[in-house]
Length: 273
View 1 (cartoon, rainbow, N blue to C red):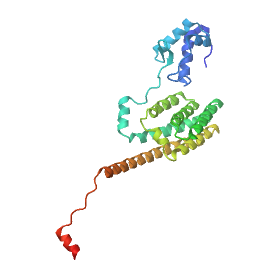
View 2 (view 1 turned 180 degrees about the vertical axis):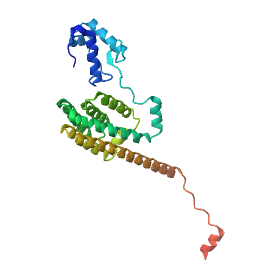
View 3 (view 1 turned 90 degrees about the vertical axis):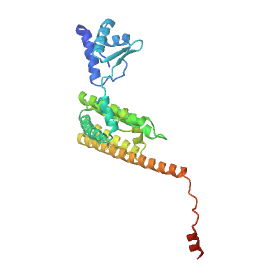
View 4 (view 1 turned 135 degrees about the vertical axis):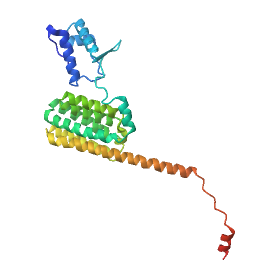
């Protein structure tokens, strides 16, 4: 991953190389850099030069040095919204429709770019993720990896689009999904028919990208998000019906059955006749 640097501008060259790896999404937030000794060997620089470069990166808030723990890529993505806005969104579920609309547009663009620009290595990565998704789907029960692999696939498509601004916007967007702001992804995958349809849609999406069919990839991405939105609505409706049914059942079980009322004198006379 790392390459030997120009000895005339060693420290600056190290900084530039690591910055480009971060910008292009090769190094992700939380990734640990090799040890100082190993990284110096890979870059073919002295350890003092490497320390100077890492100090510059730390001052730019691109890496974080943990005493005794190594150097890590900082969380350079950050949330797409501030915490107060996220709190507002969580209290007003109607905003989810806007989020899905945003995803529908931006992911379709990413898929179209990926169809046009993806390399053979990108195709291999997408195919490998699909294999893992197939394995998770074939398990006896809902595999907790499925929602995580879902995000990983969409991020890989964003990487295959080869547009760094688009990539980091997508990653920030998916951060909200990981935090469960807009939907419970386990609930989505618990939908009776959604799992298979989502898997089929992912296969079609990757198929269109690998076939370099930009228009087909664009449509596949939009259709996928449309289905996700509808499946979420159906899952919520099912949950609401189950909640109401449980309340009714609980109420009936806890209430005492009224005793037969005593027949009035008039009723007795009416019956005797």
